[in-house]
Image (cartoon, rainbow, N blue to C red; front, side, top):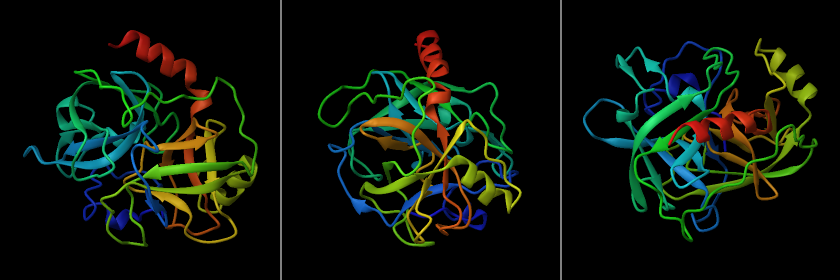
Length: 271
């Protein structure tokens, strides 16, 4: 799993507005798996050009029969296409499939609620709730995920799992089949020091994970919004990173425990 470069945005159809210092995440160096192993995973499909061609663009986590959580940076106005991707008509949600190009069931989106404090430059409060029009059919391939309790801290060097449909080699194509990999959480102060070298800001509402001993174990574009899982519980959402899986810069995740109350309240108020 590697972090994609900004120069690859158009070729990968990463067409959200590019005005931040950060780069986006996809899965690389993962191993194939199935949706039955990770039934909480959802695909966010974007109709980028308004031609009804929906392509997997981000990921998310099923939380109820009608709600998915993802990252707010997926849903922005784009200057290249002059389209506002915060509007639900640009999106569909696929659940129940191991494959990014088909299978499972597609659901139209009723509403997208991004965190009111989301900063598109610094990626602070990078979280959103998506409401679908028709309920998911819960079963072996679609399950409701469990999110971490408010204020829970995950210790450094905890083994976590990342799942998604990102590229399996540097600058390579995204695979059709779902991939997973394991990685370690990184001490936040260490992560802050590392990212300070490129002028990026890591806050206490973020979580860092990866491998600082070897290159290439990371998350990248295509996985944005997907889950970082610790002992079966969703503790992070893929947010941003730097320089394609270079060991010095771990992946950065939205720290879910900071937003558990916001998630619960947003779901309660939006059906």
